[in-house]
Amino acid sequence: MSVTAPQTQALAQSPSTTRSADTRPVWLVGVLATLAGAVVTEVFALVCRAAGVPMEAASPGEKEAAEIPVGGFVGGVLFWAIAGIVLAVVLARWAKRPARTFVVITVALTALSLVGPAAAPHTATSTQIVLAVSHVVAAAVIIPLLARRLARRTR
Image: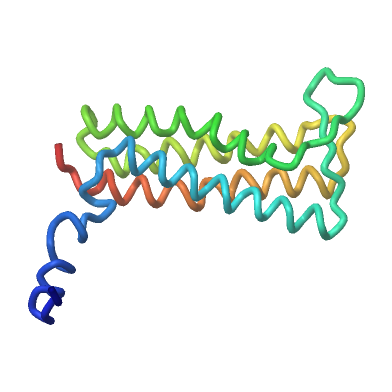
């Protein structure tokens, strides 16, 4: 049995195949955005590592820097994005302007997160810069995707 052009066109336009991020559940868009953000951030870190940036950092109070393992950026993005997904779900349910509120809160939190790399003791300046930029990279991927979904209020 062969499929004709009109049948192909109908299949391509069916709701199941044209379902965009605008109609998916907020939590699912958040998970997909987080995965994309984690991959992009890890690739950024791998490029920096290959360029010779030392991937060793220390937390406040530590006496020496420890190596950031390959995959460490993915883990960091996944860990912190959970809070962002929860925030998005809550705002989708109760906020009058969920997209705007989400963007304002998450951009402010991203800016606040830059304090960590700047204050990291026993960490090379180049590593501090990579860490700070990685926060911005992850946010630049995740925030717009979730904000777009939140702008399309469907319950």
